[in-house]
Image (cartoon, rainbow, N blue to C red; front, side, top):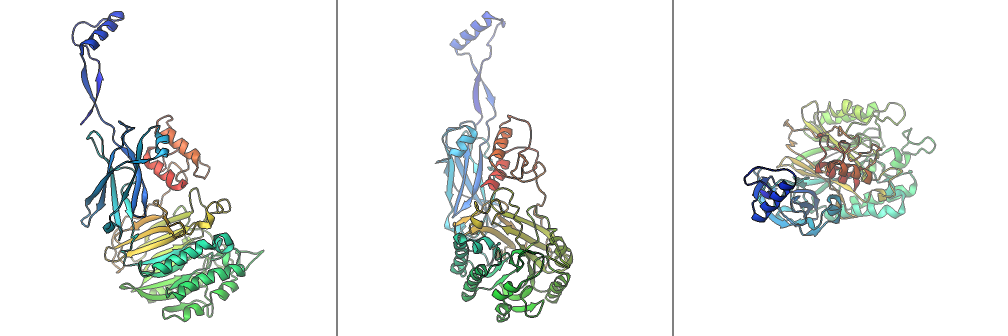
Length: 526
């Protein structure tokens, strides 16, 4: 139903100016001579903040009745690709932040608890704001929202531990690392965890005390019967004054000797005899054979040739490459070549190894700690290899940099859960902190790959967007200072409310400043 406002319309006679006009209006008012003029109702507005511990949370309000709560309806994607109504809920939670931003009052927050049947497996949820006057009921910003197997449901999982250097270097943060290992061990059966990967920078200064800490934690996985594989990073070399430029890995090999791998039935090969710098493992996971290859930091030409031969010799296997430096936060391949002698950057690794190998399907890396606003550094991209198959490339590092690591507590225990749904041809990726018991909910840390065919058939998929927003070099940064701060929110609010005509806060590059841009800012700021 359209909303009504009352406008004054003259009911007959000649219109007079000045005093006479005023008198006529007064008479008309007394006689009740009014006619309704119809105006379009404004649609409800809102944002889905995320899904955590089985609850979809966010806020919504009706601009036409800002002090009143409205209803919100929740749908889930069904097997046919349609939507099934799960239920509805009124906005009954006070959200002072929303009220302050939009200068309104009342309760506009919601928290909808998912039924047990929706807590397992991959799900996509849709959230609609219900117009209080019966008008249009739009999806609110942030909908649809992906939900992952919080309570299990994947065929199996691979867990990735990002750079652990701050946990091993600072005693006050070692509990974050221990909580990660505790969670993996306690959930290995429930979540079907088949492999644990660490992507380098196990230590910060390559001191013996650091190595003892990370060694013990990885040995806990071994004692629990969980396969693992690590790569060494630039902080794991032995250099002091010549730090990071040579390939001195004496301590790495002391605490993670090749014998840790050769004693296992799934050991496949090493590049240099007696050294664990470059190692390959082969094992069956689910219905597939998998080959995992761990590469040295900025690997040499010979290492890439060795890894390529392994992939060529195992065409039936799903290939995974683990290397410290590969992607950067802009989703581009790294150009870094920080080691001496012949060294290859992330771009080189793609050109010389990943692209030519027809069965490499995944590349996992860390290292980049640009940390432009928000929490941690992350990136991803999808490209087809020479066999026409999609390669899922992911980078995550949550420690922060020299300016932010203290505020980020060295990473607060965030790890990556890569959940493989073979039958559904999906891979779900979630970023979770066992220490905080919290998921990192934004598009950069909770996402999925669809139409994933690990059998080797090429299926067309839409690549993950890799371009940075056109209106802001860093998503969420309206001031252009390389940081995502409250100043950027102030600019967004002014532009969104129409107080200024600039578009500095167009973070998604669609030419408009909308609530979707607020979602981008909030995801980077929190």
